Length: 311
Image 1 (spheres, rainbow, N blue to C red):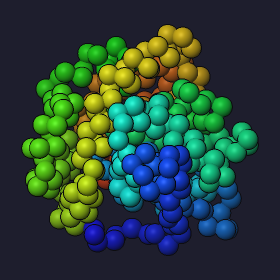
Image 2 (image 1 turned 180 degrees about the vertical axis):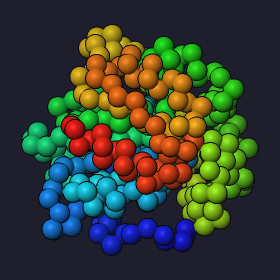
Image 3 (image 1 turned 30 degrees about the horizontal axis):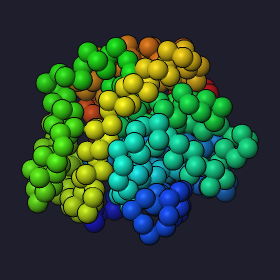
Image 4 (image 1 turned 135 degrees about the horizontal axis):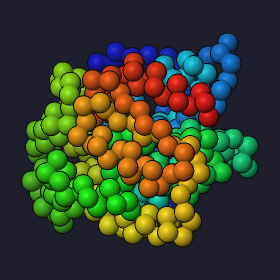
């Protein structure tokens, strides 16, 4: 377990059964962190944080309480297949639209967005940014704003142009059948370390205790398979998003592309977001590579609060 250097005093954790038969392979059960603002702080709304791969809700450890201190209820789940959540089989369940539907179900079970009484600010990074787009576009009536962090968006021209770049070689590798699991098994720490450091501008954030946490997490039965299935579903995501955009037009939810100032993906952030949304803002986290919430959590929080306070 990683050494705790962050405040969890107001965190509550739990699991919610979403669907499927309990204690069977088709069960979908979500683990989540739920952090309420202090009683003396004026309440401003709810933030849903959606992590990426290869991470879990632990990715947000440095920003959950600071965001909550500003008056927001912060909910950070492990999406299906990740961390403490269940690891069902079935590739269709790993489309980003399917996981967005999971998020809606979870929020309703937690009393958020119930009967349309509240909209949430949705923030996703990496794969989580793809899920955040599926959430905002399919459920705009539930979305106050969306921040799309560090992810090419399937279904856009920008995605088609960049997905075969050398920087994203892992897209193709992760989509192969069985081979990635075979090569990664027993070498989870080595693979994760390479993955984190290759995309970082500040490699010092990947301390041994953080690597210990993620090695243990992704050594669980099914964890790597589920993570790779997120990539194997990209072709379905691409077609679903393309068709949704064609049939419905650009989304009118306020959208912010949130990228690291030193990230290789920054060059596609504005272009792809403008393909999908009518109201677009571009924001960078200073000095950060891909892992923005870890590499510069202070600037990350500042940029998030500045943006969502206007929506």
